[in-house]
Image (tube, rainbow, N blue to C red; front, side, top):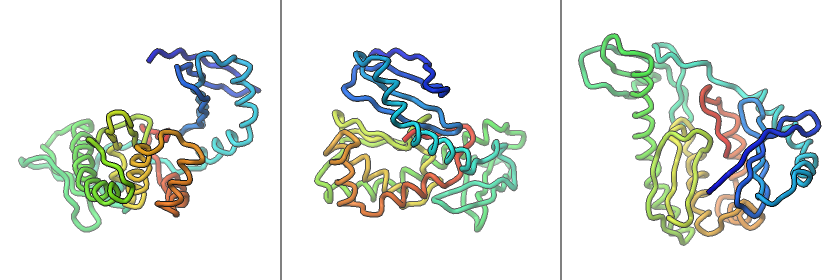
Length: 242
């Protein structure tokens, strides 16, 4: 899929415009600083793109204000005493250096990270990231198994990986789902919402009124869950778009 991108200024607002072979225009505002991105059909005029942005200026400003107010985690150094989250609960990190297999375990109010003496920040980060990824792989299967028959869909495959811009994604053609390993830090209700959200894309691809109606039918409290997901602290070096 070929794309072209450019930065345009609309009433003093920098807008990243990406041209794609798509049918409809999509506008988004993304953390941490309210970056505005428009995915526009290749044949749509620049004037039409500007009009679309102007019409949404009020909403864009509100989203940018919300991001400025949202809590952010400080840069992680992966040392004892730092705060980390797992399934929505707050834990203190306790680093244990010894000659043993690297890993992480929950010990009361602590996430205990075992590593070799002299390990670097990056090595400790990799240990914790691998643990989060494996934990999420245990949380997702029962949710997928529970919701597939309820929705009348079946996935061919699902996987977990570190994703730069999304909580999760779905490829309806291959029926494959992807989940961001960052979700291991979020409450199970948020993980369930994203599982349902992506499974519903196997029934309906677009985020339109039909899709919203499906969410309302199967997960009536999805709006409050999404709001809560947005209130949780953002990881400093990772900012989700969806």
